[in-house]
Length: 108
Image (cartoon, rainbow, N blue to C red; front, side, top):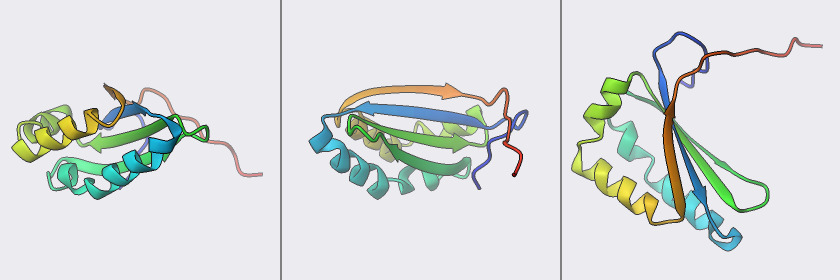
């Protein structure tokens, strides 16, 4: 389940790929095809893929129940190989985040 709320302990890996517009769909296809690699680990909650409208970026964010569960998954050889392949698809930047504040619009 996708959860965006404070104080859950959930950590999110935000992976940003800078790509040439003609390569954007290739990166998306790779990430969709390989979504099961993190999801086979019990701590993985969701995999989400976004594309920029200008064609120059793909963002993949993966939610983990905890940092420790990500660390456990990260030593799996298949997981390591998929991350290495992903890094070769474009300029790749990856960081982990936790939610510190959320606000929802009131329905009108």
